[in-house]
Length: 121
Image 1 (spheres, rainbow, N blue to C red):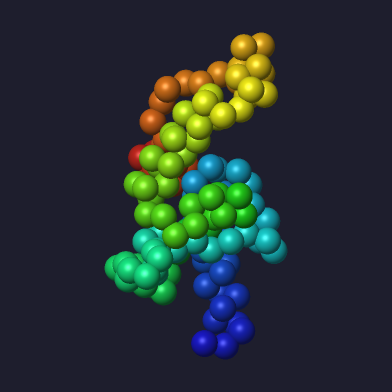
Image 2: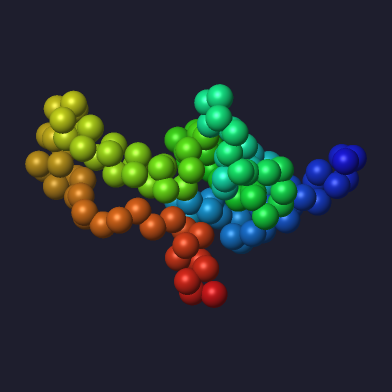
């Protein structure tokens, strides 16, 4: 695949959710977004079913891509919910700013931007 094909693929992925991260929905820059494998290629030493195909790619901000890593969507969804439990358990600063109402925990399930986008369109 030559450079032009790579740019065309990158542009197609960028526009998949109108220049937004497929996960958190923040606006991403064409010059610095990550391409995430929806189904990871590998997880540790185990093979997964993910492939290097455009249907297995999502545009992602750097934070979401780093957080998701090689997790499946459902594993990452659970991991995000566990972060709240860990913050309440381990971070006095988190508990303090929560008491002052600066953070509100909703108890809602994690719904990714692409799921909302697909439900509306």
